[in-house]
Amino acid sequence: MYLIFKYVLAWISYVNSLDARLGDSTWRWTYDYQVVGKRDYSDLDDKDFVRLRRKKNKLVTLMYSIFLIMFVSFMSWFSKFLILIL
Image (cartoon, rainbow, N blue to C red; front, side, top):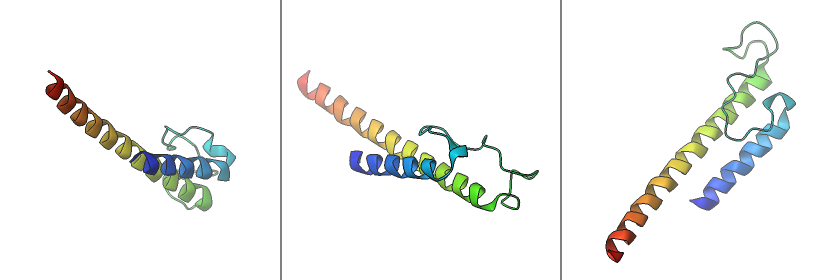
């Protein structure tokens, strides 16, 4: 799981480097990055950036999901370890 997590982080860094408007944040969704034009909710004005922003949002969601799964599985393993010791 850790390797998959690092792989997703590398993809987020790559997507961030494709457009300067995305910034350097790894842990943040990009809904607040405005597109050029009036319609921010669709890809009619700035099609490339909106699609890139949506791709980054999916990657960040996947990253949070993997992080949650890793945390829950670690806590499960740790509780079993503590029960075994005590």
